[in-house]
Picture 1: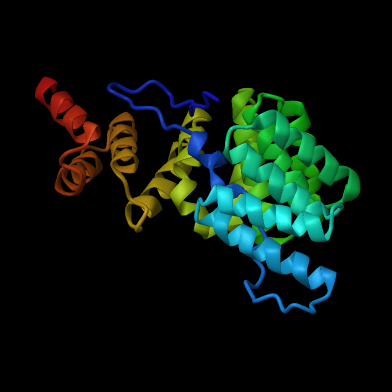
Picture 2: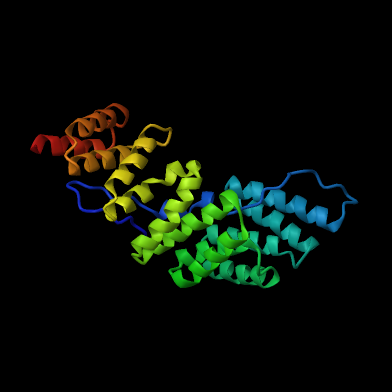
Length: 265
């Protein structure tokens, strides 16, 4: 799906790709405890053990093993919404979108108020361009959850709103989530770019300063800071970020673009 962040025109600008926001970090997967399953364990215990193992395999990107463990959970409990939802997510990761949709529908019919299923199905709907349906699922997911899981739903809801160029609505969702979740710093270039799009340069600058002072600093974050400083006529700050770009990411396309720009000034 060709998501791209709307960055206002800046000379030599490089857009930020939003597709990574739909990666596995934003899926809600219950890992549980990967405990051994005794021979005389109750059915629910066996299901939970298989699901914990399947989730761990999924997180490790061992999808065939994850599917086998999920199928074992379904053998023990054919109508487990959690197992059906996980099977849907695995199919989704494998690019089998029709099958993923089928299993999400089955899981949702069994557990219509399950926030995790609604959230993950919303991501599939968003990936497939069914934005209105995705919004409904994200609204349900964030309403039924708390903390980090609620804010993941708000954030990814904002990404889908970006797809329809609903800048203000997207900003509202993403900014609310970001204010509560500093852990989203690695994803915040999208929000910074959106703030620039809306003319909130000072707010964007604060986010970029935080990113560049964290372990999530990247060539893209420094390059965007350079461009923003130039737009704000902040020569000292532009030079500071430019030097940092060259020092830390001298092999990047952003550094080459910075040098080319400097040669024309």
